[in-house]
Image 1 (cartoon, rainbow, N blue to C red):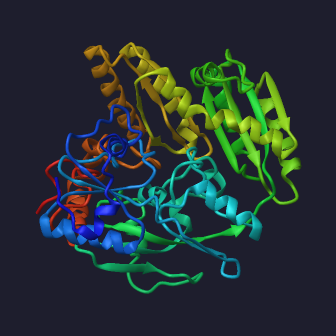
Image 2 (image 1 turned 180 degrees about the vertical axis):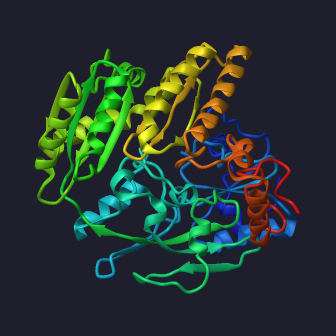
Length: 456
């Protein structure tokens, strides 16, 4: 176990039971090692001191926020330091420049709440927005429910303050609306999963607050009909602010978890929203008409924000509902929107072939789905089948012109497929970039590039 300087002792979690809760993230099957140290940083100075110590003693460091990651990127390492940044949660809002300067520990939904007083909004909206932090969102380039209209985290990060291994503090990017000075190091850190430095502050672009979103719920009697509904919405002139797909098994899992008003026997359903200023009601009526024409058996329009939020609560309950169902492998593939129907069908064909149960839901508006394969953790054959199914979905996404991860990142669970997507030469280039910032390989070793690839 690392023996940290006295100045950090009150930042160390001394209670073993509490420390164990920091040992894992939300990835399936995550388990904490026997020996690791948790440091809860309160400010940049704490981060500098930890990374200075880590380099001097060659101790691995796992940067960590709220531990909502699903790929193993925030799981503790044996003998290492877990550097938690949740307490670095300052917020400065500049309504004139339309930026927020925030610490990495700021919770996504809390930032949104603070911005309402200024008539501004921060659009990235992961399903876990009530608990996930901005630092974690930056680490994985998180997307979420509203990407179809607003894009992902990278589209809103103008600049960063980052502490590098050894304790050097750098700033990247800018606060201004424009700026092309030098290489885009901000873009390099967004999505880097804690492998090259620790973000201690972010400059985020804000937008004028849209109207309160209104929602359409469309129910279909089959998966094929549901996909026809997605196709119908792609022809709409005004892009929805949200377009979420739940297949039949996902709907059933949500209703088993709690009554959210969904028909448990549905073949699939779509949740669609508009927040277009002055036109949200007009838009949802148009969406409802298109979905009815596409074959929806039931269409409900929530024409006030409270009712709209109630409908969306069911979608936000998907992850806890699937977790309650039992052990699962959770995917995060993204394909061209026009081939989404092929992906959904392939998921269920793979599950049937492997003797598994599957769900397939997610962000239909941008082609990013999160299929899950459920298995009996006590049955080695089922564990093997789930792992094989996981790999088959990645290969299916590639065949459809897609990618192995849309927003969750690579972590440890997808490291084995990185070279298959990027190629050996590109992976080598990326490893050399990591080595430039982290020559000793102490930053989140084993994540993204796999075990044994971090040290020169």
